Length: 412
Image (cartoon, rainbow, N blue to C red):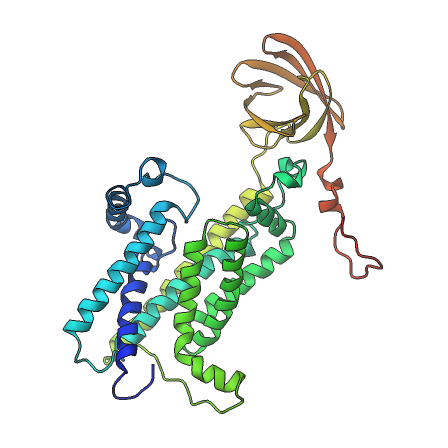
């Protein structure tokens, strides 16, 4: 985006398309961080718009692509790569292309968009910054990736999904998780300031390129979203490509970058915009810090655990195919069978008893620190199940620790 009197036709068309597509993608949608939803009560205000897409996307899936069943239904999945997500992204592209054609015909005499470009740049900057804050703080307070749960410690590696491998690999090192979050947060902070936007977009590109690669290579269902975020960082870097090449590759001097500032003619508007930006960004960062600390306290400081929390080997008395019993969730217990399957049973706890599967009542006692005895009936037959506690800290994943000096590689 240079300061010449008129932009080339290809640049004007590219800008129109980017403006339409990025505006559509930055508006509220399911599972994405939108600057519009970052305002207080923003999610409530955005509900009618989100509901409109929830009506359009299934209609297109059914009547255009002739799909049916689960693929055309909205329900909580935790995935951003559902069929309906791909359809919505396709519609964004088609609408952006159509809007670009119409805009190019109606506005063909305009020589440039030097006044509109800083506004689009501002929208993309803050959308990307707030998204990086959301993911960054979820790693600075290591919540997105947590240490392996008890049932994972006794699960054969071959049963892990690629995404499960990635999640537990990241969770195995809180230090690396925090480092990753710091890199994402740094990119977001640099994006907040006009003069450091190029540096921030370079940092964001490096971070997001790694995220996109991991999502594709480990089948994490956030491929669409992360790819769009990566493209946002490219959009912010694009005006400086030539300058960066001159400095970093060709060892040539580079001209100063144009000032892509949103201009306010009136002084009171400039002051109001500055105050709004400070409070808006402060609101976002404080909100992320508070919610991050609250979840960190909930997960690590005061976690909700059952009274029998722990991992146990079966010594005697259990059904013949039980090998290990895991008490980890407040309302359930898991059993790893001889076939290396995990079976989960609902559990209700009382003072010194528990009801398993809604029918089998047991009293429990701890004859010593290493054993747990459950006495009651299983499927109507009397049973006394004797369990031996396994210390999770003795697993090599937890006990190996960090070493400055290693005379030999320890790769088991």
